[in-house]
Every structure is written in structure tokens, then in C-alpha cells.
Image (cartoon, rainbow, N blue to C red; front, side):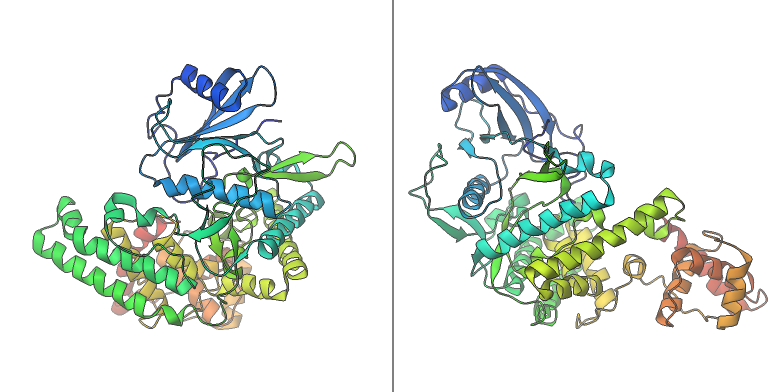
Length: 519
């Protein structure tokens, strides 16, 4: 069964939305690549072909006259520091030596361009199996539960066998680092700086700052915020001016951005309280998604077995809070929140709920009840998730970061203590366009619902949002579709002769279009 030990373009994280066509392919001389592989592995490479192309790497399958195939992963970016490759190789070596998790054996690597193919590369073992995402939809509910149970087992391995005292990335001692790693060589490891693009992209590497290791999540985010503050103090005005903003306004915008960053940094203690838990720290896979989990169907009992975990770049240590996450493919999507689900889609939604319940129970049974509490807490408290959106998952320009900060403080207040956005729709839509509406009596509401199954989009969008929020704040548990039906009848029954209502109606219609674009 075919697999590529690297990224799949359809399943990469939010670091970029680039497709294969956005950047040119690497100019790789296949013959030179084959010669390099033959030399390093001491057997003749007879064929090489590109399997896939991700945001960071191109993946090639190398076949030999004798012995197993090999995967060549070639870097598409020369911006990454050499530490990225060194940490990834070290992480795979550490996991192989300390756990039962199957990872690719690294045969050879070079983190520089000073090699025959003129790009950083890793030559590694081609693991058997196929990517989980390719077969997930074909599995029964019980088979999916069995796979999730194995995923929890992997998390348990990382939590119990890969514990550390700080947050950082793994490296091998300098004496042990070389370009040919033998699987039977025991190596000494150490924690070093975090490899995160926010520390080095767009000239950030020229700004002195700490990249770790860090003693806590609060210290880690404080360093990220401090780095961005220094960067935009230097480059922010120029960035705005290049966007056609005049010098004075650009200067004022940067001043306001720095104030927001200072305020956020001063309030981190309100987010990272004792309930989050700071220690111990365990190894966290950088992209633990279905495209990086390899599976096979057992010929003996027909069970789906996880046979390998690939793509360990950007892996780092973190605490139990970081480790406890629902697999992204069983989470409820925003589309599912707003769609009128029927038949198959409704069945899929219900199944996802069952799988999340199962996963939460498995985590509690194997990693302790604290993991269950963390999963439940994450559904109520999204502040750290919003911080990750700003400072971990993507490098933002000045204007986007300013907007994200404004939204953050609007949600959580200047003290950053509000955590009540547990409803995913309210969290997604909450903003200054929401207005105060007067909810009718329960009898009237039930009368509205009895008239139609679902009326969505028949009243201004932000009016629907406002009605939904007000219903939730008053203790109702109606779905988005039910709230839209109620909103429609409320809208239709407004006093058309009331000038105040009419003016508010015009303002709501004006603001509604911008919100519709975000759904």
C-alpha cells in the first residue's frame, strides 16, 4: 500500500493555504538525486519519482536494485534554520529509542545546501501502510473507535515515556550529530530552542529574543508576544506605508498595536492559571493529523492497525493541556453548525459526537481523569486557542495581527478573564455587530417554531446572530436553524412604524453582508 512520508496538500494545517501551483517545483536533477542516494545507502538507486508536494517539502520515492524503497524529503524553503532539520531528525531518533511508536528510520540527512542536490534533505525509511485519511470514510463505527483507541495509546506512550522539565525542541548532542545515523547507535539528547516560524520569518531572526527552552506555557507565549512587539516596532510603519497608508496614520496604528501587545503580555497570568497545569512536559507531535498516521488491515483478524507515525517536523514538548486534543477529523466543522443537516449528513454529525465521547472516555481511562477535564475545559475556554491563532499557527502582517488583537479583547475584555464562549456558533460570530434584541415569551417562540421547519437567511444575518445569542443567554438550547426561524418571525413582526426600529433595521442590514462572507 502506498504512502508518502511527508505532507499531503489537502490536510496541512493553517500555516498556509498555498496549493501546488502557488510556488514552482524544485529544480531537482533526478540523476543527481539517484547518485546521492546510491552513495549514501551503498546500493544502486534505479528509479526516483516525485510522490507529492507540500508547503514545506517535496517527497520522492527512491527504488533500488536490492533492498527496500526509500523516501527522500527535500526542503522547498531555504528560510528555515538548520535547527529545524536537526530537531526533526533528533525527535524521530528519540521516539524510536524510547517508545514503541514506529517512526521512519533516518538513513542520511543534510540541513544545508552544500550537497549534490543543492537543497536540504532527509533520506528515510519508507514505512508500510497507507494514510488514515484515505480509508477513514470506509470504516465502520467500531473500526473507527478501535483506531481512536490506538491513537490514545500513542498519546499515552508520549506522555509516560517522553517527559521533560521544559518546553523546547529535541536535539542530539553536538558530538553525536552527523550525516549518517545508525539505528543501533544510542544517542544523548537535550532540549533546545523552539523551532517556530514566528521566530525567524521575514527578518525576525535578526531581532534578539529567547526561543527557549521555556519553563511554562505563559513564558513561551510571553516570548512570542515580545518578539512580535519588537518586530513591528521596527518594521510596522513601513509595512503600513507599503499598503498605501500615510505616514502619520501608519505611525499611530503601530502605536496602538504595541499598546495591545503590551496589555496582552501583562494579562497572560489571567489565562495560564493553575487549572491549565504547567508540568511535566511531554513530546507533542507537530501535526498529529490523519495524513501522518499510517495504517494496515491485519490479514489475521481484519483489524485496522496503526503501523507508523510520520512527519515529526516542528514537534516540541508541551504539557498535558497541549497533548489533550480531539483528532481534528472528528471535530464538528463550522459548516455543520450552520447547515440544515438531513439524512447522511445528520448521521455523520451524530457519529462524530459518539466518537468524541468515546475518545474522551479513552483519554480519561488511560491518561487519567484530568485529561477529560482538560478536554471539557477547552470547549469552554478558547483563549489559548485564540493566542495560538495569533502567535503559533501563522505569521501575520501588522494589520491582520491588529485585527486579531482587537477581536481578542472584544471577546474577553481588557482583563482577559471572560471564558464564556463555550457555544461554537457564538464564539465564531461574536463581534461588535451583535445587537440587543427583545426575546418574546416562550409561548410565542413555540408558536413561531410550529409554523415552519426551518427558515434560514430570510432576515438580516447579524439579526439572526443576535437572536441566537440572546436565546442562548436566556437559557434556550435551540439550534442555529431554529434560532433563524424565530428571528425571521421576530423580524416580520417588528413595528414598521417605529422610526427607532426602522433605523436599527437599516443599520443591521448594512452590517449583515460582511458577516455573511465569513460563514
